[in-house]
Length: 262
Image (cartoon, rainbow, N blue to C red; front, side, top):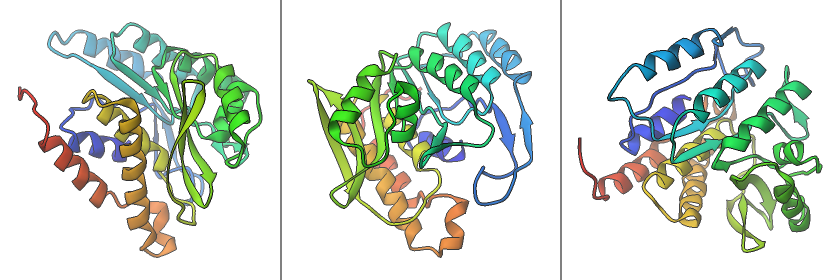
């Protein structure tokens, strides 16, 4: 969430943060984090916001949730809002396995949540879970197309982290074929790329940017952060991405837009 909030700030977008679970660290690289569930807090937070007459929420980005109950709470609350964009990153696992603590019940809750989304950004493994078609980051086009079509959602599906021809990137279906947008592959495991990509994409879409152009900018901005992070020692990678250049580029883009300041 810290990366997403910083990204939206660079876009000049005010953010209402909705933590579903507090963790002492991220879930990888630091052992088992201390956690605090916020499912009792969520309904009271939304109830408070509904009482604020001049509070208008235009879009939503959902990443790691953590609890089946929280997934259902978010689905209920968002269904009552009139939102331009609901971007769901269905964070459930990677590299062939679900994250610790997730089960079939959690998968079903995510499947229900993506039904109200306008855009979803699964990696190949997560798309496989949603569609029932097993996938890897090197699955061929035909497999990806079949999986996208089998997802029970009307949202635009952007598959992330797919490796092709020495690069890595994202793809989405348009006119019956996959549109590929990639960047150079930097070896290593970098934390938070999905969070950054989702925030960048939603930010650009909120400026009414063409969908393909928004995906291109999100892919490039994520690559910039990974490239800068890769120059640090590997033991520092787990602390998150270096967002310096990416946020600079977003700020320059934002300042170049004609906006009504309020």
